[in-house]
Length: 228
Image 1 (cartoon, rainbow, N blue to C red):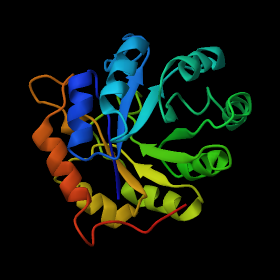
Image 2: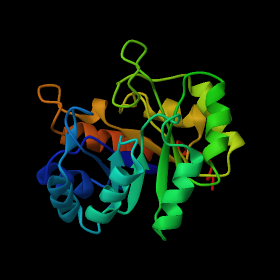
Image 3: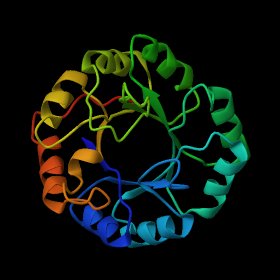
């Protein structure tokens, strides 16, 4: 089971999360007015330098501008680009264009699981995205990601069965519920942000929660089938 930890905002936490055994370390890049946990390009590179070769480095952008996304691609030293803007703003055709212009680019595409239409959305991106990440939308703010809220796992399970790409399950996952989530959805990987952050400072990761999350996700018999 691949474990991805998000919400890393400094080099110290990047090194910590990688040392604890996370397979993928996620950093949100951009302006703070777009996401509370966004960091500058320079900070992202310092975090990824601290991670080194211990984990796959994932850069998330919420930008809807292909030119701005290209700046991320050209400036940040990542392994995977995570496109998390609304699927109505960055289409499958846009992802295809980015990959055409940047050979070798590997992409994670966020799919908000808000109802049965999420299945169609996931299938629309499976030919251009290398991975799909299924996440929750806050019903009040309409923000997708970092909500601390699970979504309907039965829908996520249907998506895993319907697509040919590896699927990462996100949305309100914690050390307490990740095993149940894996058993229900059987994803390729799991992701945690909010519920592995410190309760007194959400800009910092809680090493003990990260450790427990990784251990729970990798309990023998708790991993899902391999997809993709």
